[in-house]
Image (cartoon, rainbow, N blue to C red; front, side, top):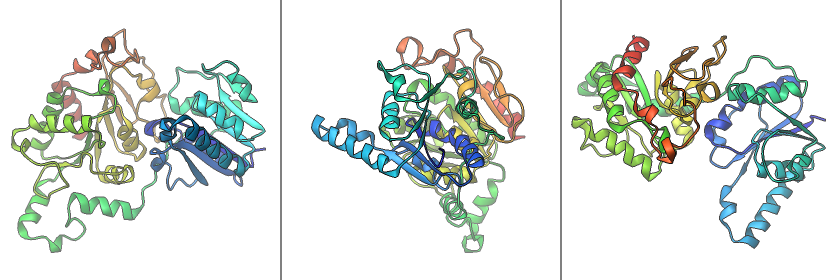
Length: 389
């Protein structure tokens, strides 16, 4: 056993990224094994260049939208392709029905899963099922499965590698003449030297609107940052709703309200890259920034994995589950149920209300989290002042 291992995590980008300590632990226990990851298409970029993974397999969720017969054909083709690889072990960390079925049809003799709800008879698709402590951070939940397999677990590390070529590309995007100031004319040189503090990555949007802060509040923080001499890089996905939020945020900043959304310009303290980056490009941009501020979303986990200090706003989610991970920290991550907490160099700002975390999509399903909107810009700026100083 353990000659060919398949780890299944059919979730979102952040979930996949914070699964990377599992691959490190597996490689440390099985140095000569073939280790593969199965993830949803569109999330694989956070696993690229990971030295502990031999193969990344992606599942195209678009299959589910096909007509019934064609969907059946494509699903079977996908299962057969996995079966041909000859895995002897599957470790299913998704907890979903589809992942359980894939695990079973992989042909692996050892099929490990976590105890979760699902269709009748689901438990029989596994050879071993472990019940884990759901009150731990997700990084530690994933590793608990390996511990119960009897494996040795070293220091948990969320791993995200960026090449020097990617970093250079990002630097030249932020400042087209960044790599060689000798080619800049005097006005450009003056602009570059005037931003003499930090380059701040801000990602204010999410596909889940209940995780988003008020647009005008985010604008207040951005205005304070640029008035303090810092430079801001704004990012979002290409989703229309997220792009509209970026436009709305910029509309509260008078000197930039009429600026078109586009690529970086040396003259602007706000670099709006919303909707312009692939996932690997976003990772590259984040890698050259000094700091991250934003909401509980995948770019938060990306910045933390790159070793950047993170200040994140949390609403109905639990930081003890999803807070940004610090590879260098030695203390217990986010020991409190809610409130403002620190883990290493990362800070989560959250209300300490008794209803938090509720895990709901806004209060009463409204897509608006009152606990998040109750956090005021002045409080956030005070935290930023202390950290950035």
